Length: 82
Image (cartoon, rainbow, N blue to C red; front, side):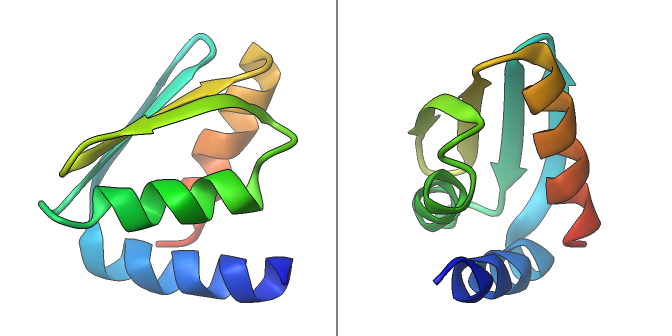
């Protein structure tokens, strides 16, 4: 469920968050190494209507939002989990 996904994402971000930035339709999330894949998966499930694509490596997640407004909301919501 979305509530369960949000709870998992909140816990993971509290433990693994390093930084987040937004530029136009792009949001990048930096994590402690080894945590980006799990974050990316949870973000994609939780925010699929706002996202065009999610790309991650070991310690970062690049989210491409459908609109700049969606990127701003996503960035703010990710920071609210902290």
